Amino acid sequence: MRAASRSRATHLSCLLIAIIACLVVLAAPAAATGPGSPHTVMGYGDWEPFIGTDLTTPAIPDYNANYFAYSFVRSDEAKYVGLRLKGQFGYARYMSFNIYRAHHSPSFGALTDFQLLPAPGSVNPFVPGTDPNARNRSYVVAVQPAGYAKDPQENTLEYDSDQMPTLVVMIRYYVPQRSATAGVPLPTIEAYDVRTGQSIPMPEQYLLGGRSMALFGWIMRPIFTTIVDNRIRFYHSEGAGLFPNADNLYLIGAVTRRRNEVVVVRVKPPTFPKDSSEYGATQVRYWSFNQTNRDTSTPTGLRDDQFKVASDGFVYLAIGDKGIRRQAERRGYTFMPWLIRGQTGAVIYRNMVTAPSYAGSIDKVPIVDLSDPQNIYAQNASNFIGDHAPTGVVVSLKRFLKDGGGLAPPRR
Image 1 (cartoon, one colour):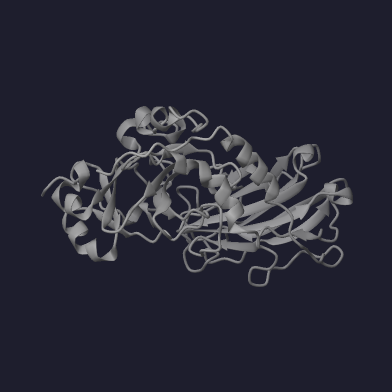
Image 2: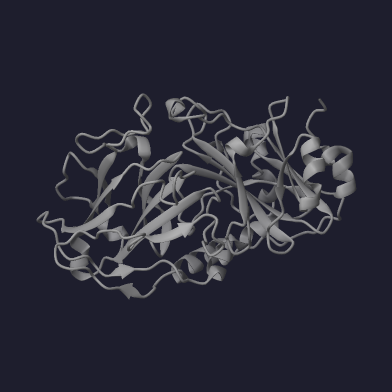
């Protein structure tokens, strides 16, 4: 075992997060479209793509998800701009809409796929009992400040106008099929005046991309103070400043791995649906493990259906050099190559659309507060949800081959 090193848990972590969230702001605006014309998407159009497998995508994306954002500054007359999004339900495990403000980004409102009312004559394929391959799969989402008339045939996302100086609309596809946009075009975007309901020119676009990845890395920096020995402890993160999905719950564990070492993680996983007929009948819609670089990019990840479940009901994950794959899999581990840049990064455990009855819900774990050094131990997720939380250890290759550092699958 490596000697413990006492890391300094900083009392400035909350202040750092606030400062960086404010720094992560303005980019150059794009030109507005013509009067009254819906913004027809060609390719990605004005939707900014953030692809989970792209190392230039920041904010801890899931490796098996794609994200598309449209944003504008709500100044002057743009305060009265609503957006009408006309699209088709994607061929994916999951899709949703979230709204954020660019300079600080919890979700200020969200719609999950099964909550969306389909357009007249269409069906919502995310509702159990409907055809997941239905050809008529259209919807309309309206995004507008609260206090104005709503169309009952549209799905309306409202927000407090005073809290939203810059509006960000984000659509997500998890495990997209057929294409990066889940086999359907991205929604067309039409601007309208919320006072009159009439179509108006599109506002100047505000671009989220092109920012320094280091800014996002500063937001994540406090988690690395939890590396005090060879144990990997997982903590409940709300993802402040990192555009968290309202449907996701996250546990994050920081890790340092040196040459010829193996990261071993064990968890009792939740049940997940095999197909759309089981949506709502399992403990989560989706779960995954992802590796995260210090700059919040995602070099690799595995989704729920890629893991081997051992005879004791646990998943055992081995992360290391590619040369140990065969030995790890022979011993019953799911193998993931270490692709984190350098020696230090993090492992993210994600649960999405969690059933309220799930005994292992991450919601039962307090949001981590690292201003108190004792919380490194006290707020470890396993203290609250036991084996439903991941636990990990970093061991030498020799120790891994012997007993996995105490985290080894049962022998067959």
